Amino acid sequence: MKQFFVALSLFAAAFAFTAPAQAASQDECAIWICLPGGFPSGCGAAKSAMRDRIKDMKSPLPSFSSCAVNPPSGGGSHMTSDFGYAAYIPARRVCRQYQYHSFSSDNKECVAYETIPEQYVKNTFCHVNRDGDRRPRYCTRTYRWAEVFIEGQLAGPTYYWN
Image 1 (cartoon, helix red, strand yellow):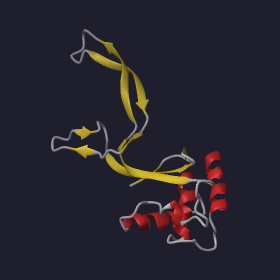
Image 2 (tube, rainbow, N blue to C red):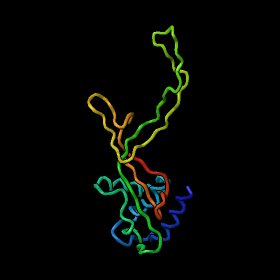
Image 3 (cartoon, helix red, strand yellow):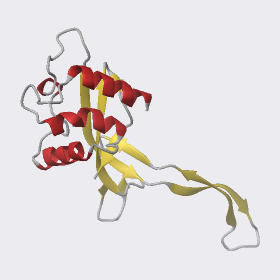
Image 4 (tube, rainbow, N blue to C red):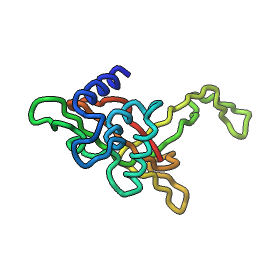
């Protein structure tokens, strides 16, 4: 969360809230600070602007230079973004220890389970072939993701949506 507030202070220093200096709208420029925080309260317009950009087949964020009042030229803050698709694999329970029985037709029983947390496999689509096999294994759907970087450092958690 500390990174989010650092992003917010850098954003305030680099942007004018009255009117964008170049092509992007104020709501689009707000995506730069709202996305790293997961679009908290007060960021509804930025989230809508991002959805509109995606519907219009644009990148989720406008270029940083279209939002900066005085675009950085060597000095000052430098913000970048990255985005793409990710295969989603939900949390699942797997057996980690079996007890074997000589008297059972099944011959083994699970006695210890482990929960594997959900995960996203970036830059991969979830594919299901006609036999029902999934690639990557256990994936259920494909999501989109975006990240914001300040001076090359991730400004907050990766934001996922479908």
